[in-house]
Image (cartoon, helix red, strand yellow):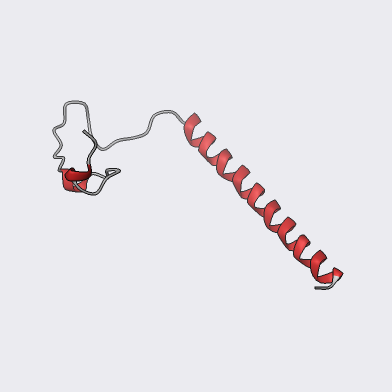
Length: 69
């Protein structure tokens, strides 16, 4: 590969890294802004009864046979 090709690849990598850093900073700012706003609004009140089924809960294991004991 030529030196020009290497420099082009390096510049592309540097550009992509800079874009990733910029987007990471933007994401952190948005997360901090939402955290500063206070409480999260909920459609449920204290004392409201809700229906929970195990089939709709995300668990780290697939079946009860694989569940830790």
